[in-house]
Amino acid sequence: MERLLAIPLFLFSLVVIGVITALATQVSISDLLAAICQAETFFALQFSILISCGAMVLAVSLGVSSAYFLARHQFTGRWLLDTLLDIPLVMPPLVAGVGLLFLLGQNLLGQPLAALGIRFIFTPLGAVAAQTFIATPIVIRNAKAAFESIDPGYEEAAKTVGLSPLRVFLQINLPLAGRSILSGIILAWARTMGEFGATLMVAGATRLRTETLPIAVYLNISSGEMGIAVSCALTLLGVAFSLLLALRLIQRGERRGLPAKGGQFG
Amino acid sequence: MNIQFNGAKKILIYCLILLVGLMSLTASVGAAAEQELLLYCGAGLRQPVDELLKSFQRKTGLKVMVEFAGSGQLLARYKATGQGDVLLPGSHFYVEKMAQQGQTLWTKPVVLHVPVVAFPKKLAGKIKTFNDLSQPGIRVGLGDPKAMALGRTAEEILKNSGIRMAVLGNVVVRAATVKQLTMYILEGDVDAGIIARADVFQNKNKLGMIEINPAWYKPEIVTVAVLKSSKQPKQAKQLAAFLSSPEAIETFGRYGFLSVE
Image: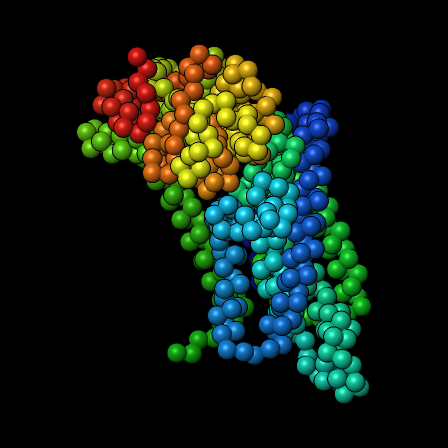
């Protein structure tokens, strides 16, 4: 009877394959190659990877430590803070982008930051900031669930043999939660690679300067150049798929070593 | 209440939920097939068009569904779906493109979509003439020349102004839509940008404008077209004629568009 559950799985997988095939059949192989070799596509690809990596470094450093604190400490208003951190998850990215634009723009933080030599608006740094804002809550959700699912016994034992809290975190909790944290990172990374609205608002859509692959797709759809748009989209899908696959493989390798369990949100 | 589900029942319930989902999907497809006109409309024309459609629906009883988006995107959507009755983009360029491909049944110019140099009023001292765009330190925002109708016009203006290179040196950002660019100017993230007169009208309190020498550009003509794909060409023509009627031109005028004459 349980095998019946395979039917929805099969149907949905078919839709995903259908969408990718429908996109792929829009362009010929030669058009695809020509579009990929274009300076603009190549720039967008490089830029997307660079920006998403930058955002992930920030999101992981901010997210994992925040999650650890949240999972290990009880304080007044914790539930409120917890809910607050979910807000970016439900925010349409375009709204997040407009919000960041207001916050980091000339009217609020723009001028004091510029005095320090930091410029977010219309710069690659802005794209990193926008994507970090989107990615961090996903990392926090997963890491927090992972830390909470660890048996406190391990930690107690480590403390009794005299490990400092920092070493407990680095040597016990982090490795135990590793797999679930990695799941969060995979989800967050996938989101940043495809992120469009927030990046567009904060960094602008300047070709060959702040042009990520999703922005390249949008600009080329807008100018009616479907061939280039679809080629950029397929490049994005190809790169994202390889990245996700690589991370899954690492995760599988780790799974053999550790029996940790934890929830996933994203 | 104490209900226990065994495996088979659970699956049954699951299948039911799936069925309801599929049914709602087909229902929504059915609703769209109802006699409704589909209008593709340039995003920059939203306010006057919203007002006009209310009046049209009141007068004729015909229902109109509108898709607002950048003109290029509208064309892409039309090409992908092959559906729609009337097209009203921010520029005649797109209508001409469609006409060349034999995709239009009837077209008529409506109003002029005129570019101006806009600046935030609180920075009024910085920009007094068009040539100030080339002053050192001025941050200029422009539209992407391929994705945005006004981006292309801005390019033409710069070429004919004789100060193209100096202005381009001041460009700090390109926007994908005119509303995005307008927002940057409103926020003061750029000192000036080339946007539509209508966008300045929409933000009269916050934006100032400098007219641009009309000899430097061909104004965009907002043009309406009845699409070949229309399954109800008579009603589509009725809508297109209404959108180019004197009443419509008067309404567009209140939102900063200039009449074609």
